[in-house]
Length: 250
Image (cartoon, rainbow, N blue to C red; front, top):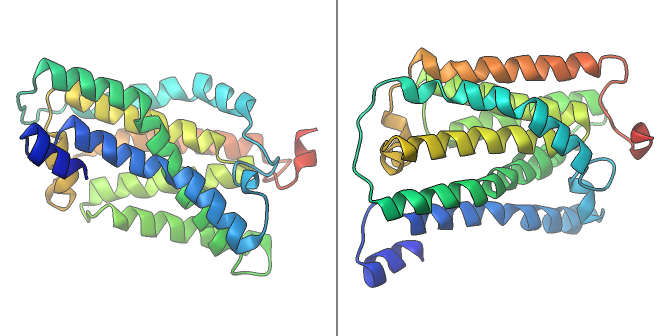
C-alpha cells in the first residue's frame, strides 16, 4: 500500500518516509496480534504476554531505560563512525525520518519483542515438560531463526544479530517479562536508524540488501554492551533465579 501511494500519488520511488512508516506500523501491530493469538491458542489472558505479573511493569521499563539505554546508545554510535557512502536527502525527508524514527520505531521494536521473545518463545518453551529445557530451547531457536530471518551470513553482522537476539531472549527469561528487552531493542533500532538518516546513509539500500553488506568489527561493539548488560542481569538474579510468578514482585 505504501509503495502504491508513493508511486501513484506522490510520484516517488525508492526508500521513502511513507514506506518507512508503513514498515514500522506493520511491526507494531504484532503487539495486539500476538496477544490475541496467545489468547486463542492457550486460553490465557492477553495481558499475560507483558510479564508473569500479568501487566506491563512501567517501573522495570523506566529503570532499564535510565540505566541501560545510555550504554546501548553510546555503543550504537560507534558503527556510523566507519566511512560509508552518503546519499542526498531533502530536509523534509530528514525531518520525516526523524519523527518516524522517534515515534514509530520504538513501537516496531516492541512488536518484534512481543512476537518473537513473547509469543514464539512461549510456544517453543511449551514443547518440553520442564521449564529449564523449555527456556534453553526457546532461547536457542528464537535467536537462530530470527537472526537468519534478517538475511545475512556475514560473520560480523550475523554475529551481532545472534548476540542481540540471544540477549533479548535471555533477559526476558530472567526478568519474567518483555519490558527490559523492549527498552534495549528500541534504543538499538532507534539509534541505528536515526543516526543513519542523520548522516545521510543509504538506509533503504542497506535494509533491502542485507545479504550483500560486508560487516566490520565495529558491528560487534553493541554486542559487547549487550553482553555486559545480560551478564549483569543474570548476576543480579543469581539467587532468585528467573521470575516465574506474580508473587516474585511482592
